[in-house]
Length: 279
Image (cartoon, rainbow, N blue to C red; front, top):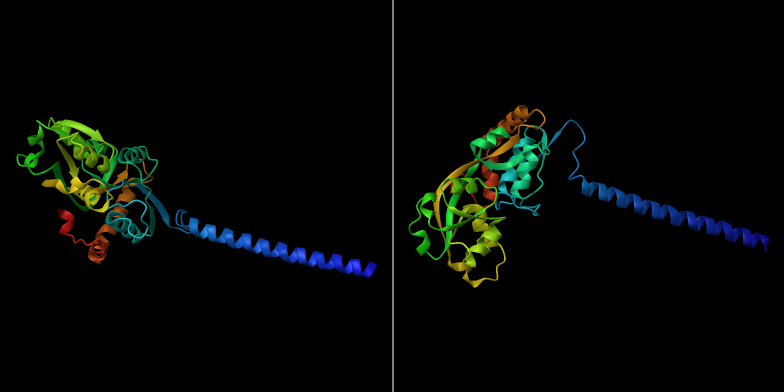
């Protein structure tokens, strides 16, 4: 009986050890898997520098929460930095928050920004990334007939997205401006007739009109009129680490991917060409 009891205890210890080792292996595998998933946000090992540029949602050039198609500006910037052995991280924020983080040096810069003289106090501008159309949007065609330039809208209530250079331009032109947080709100204000027209960059407004889910049947009645095409750039914060060197690396990378054709290949993934990006 004593031998039988000893054998049973030994068998139990062996089984317990096997279970423990099995659980430990599963935990280890889980940890490795989790680490692999996190590696997309962790600076790579080695000598690669990691740069963070804050982006604001601006589809289709910057698309939040879409890893497969993050937007052509983001893909272009990643490719340009990659030619210089630099890894790019692109967190998304509302525009004002993104600009604040860049201007205070909490991130290295902005994925894109249009030119304003006062921004030169905070930023260095890269080589040209592209152009974006500026357009008035209104319900029906009547309100757009007399609009050829921004100052023509002085007798109207005009909605603009907060923080964009268009806000400053509209105010400088003496427009009665109503400021909103994003293109979706701008569109809702327009459709609810709380504004006479919207002044917006064409790319994100068209994306909101045609790619977002809307339950409003009148959306088909929204018309647009392009009044200008504005250049835009990536911006490097003057408070980033060695900002002039970082700017030079980015510009050299942009030249490289234009020359090897990658720039146009990225645009083609979004159904665009270099000429399209000027409209």
